[in-house]
Amino acid sequence: MWKDLDEQRQKHMRLITSAVEDRAAKRLKAKDLEMDLIRGVNGVLQERLRNLHREVEVWRDFARSNEDAVSVLHDDLQCTRAQAVRGRGVDDTSSCCWGDNHMAFCGRAEVALSVRRCKGCGQGEAVVLLLPCSHLCVCAPCAAMTRACPACGCVKTGSIRVNFS
Image 1 (cartoon, helix red, strand yellow):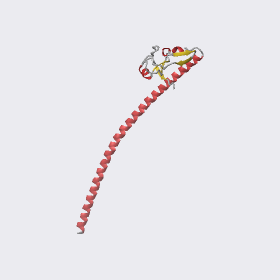
Image 2 (tube, rainbow, N blue to C red):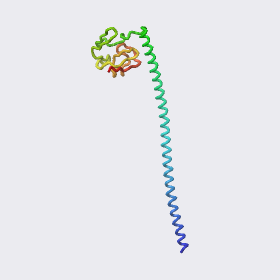
Image 3 (tube, one colour):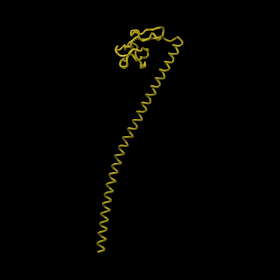
Image 4 (cartoon, rainbow, N blue to C red):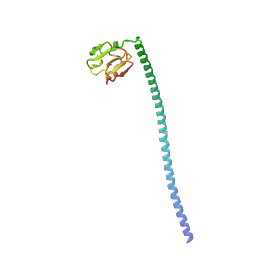
């Protein structure tokens, strides 16, 4: 009888051990699959990170080139101002395009008699200075679409929005 009980206990222990081992094996397999999935996601995220680093470099280079362009334009503006002060510059009243828009000139002082109208559409207020000719003659929508100054025909290389308030 003791022998039968001992055999039943061992058989029962083997069943319990077998069940625990099967359950542990299933959990290990599930965790291995989860780790494989995480490795795949990690690889995708690392590739995305490398792409973002490349994109940051491109934008940084773009910003540096724009800073260089701004520096050159600033230096040109300072040079032009210095020439104007020394009297060698171009009389900037000749670049004003408001003669048709009821602007009166008293020496160098300007007095606006009416709203500055856009030379492009004739409807909006001219608030954009075109470069390199320095004509203040178009509204913002027309400035975005124009390739040449409507006042003098000069090819537009840039523009600056002017705030009058």
